[in-house]
Image (tube, rainbow, N blue to C red):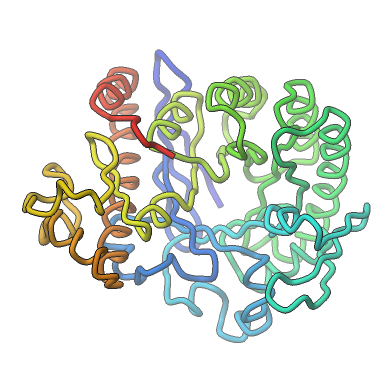
Length: 373
């Protein structure tokens, strides 16, 4: 993996860069849809390409349970298994495992947990998380970390940072087997405590990784607190490494975090909202079940170049959702993914042009926050 920083905004920390991998590049800032189980829900790889998607995030936890990392490896890795020739990042599975609540038991060696599918027992260690991601053959792997929910006590967050750093060191050593074909990112934890975030960041930098991810944010804390913690954390990051904010967020979140210097994003929001009949536009969100769209034959967003907006109306999509037709989910998800990817392209161009702050201000002025989740 190679990361090139191409342009820095004068007024903010916003950056434009290029992250190169064996399966193509990511022009940053970049948004990656979530392909949890080797699929971005309802959308084909070809549709993703046409929407401008450069990379996706797949989930180690789910893929180790079904179909199993060994089966994916026999298929030639994730790219061949799902017929996607773009960039793939795999998370470590830590977030999902720690979300199981009563089904897990943590020790310094890893996490013992029971599958949410059939209750069968598994043990995920830092070494095993790396081995699985090596078999999946993603372009970028992530270290196993402990992700806390919000709110968390200071003592819990302190212990989490200690464990995350210990596992990061083990992960770095284990990853030597896959070093030639896969990059490895460390994950910063520390909940909303600035000193713990600084300690975790400094510890990860000492170990040394190809890039750095920010975990444990966008887990229920207020947006303003997230921005404050992110601003403090990014300050410690090396300039020549990519910065990845995990699981965030709304269009407004993304633009604020780009201003703070984040390069990479992923989130389930575009596809989840799409499946639930909610779409993003430059004027805010539209809930397609709304009665006012019954005879509205305009596109979802008149300025949008996606397949959905070029071919179908609000009235038609409302009809599809009211009739419980799967096509409605597909068309809405496709639009939302395109919207997010296009927003990143515009943001990147604004950084290159030297007017990012003006771009962000103008976008948010037109964008409605009503009902945003």
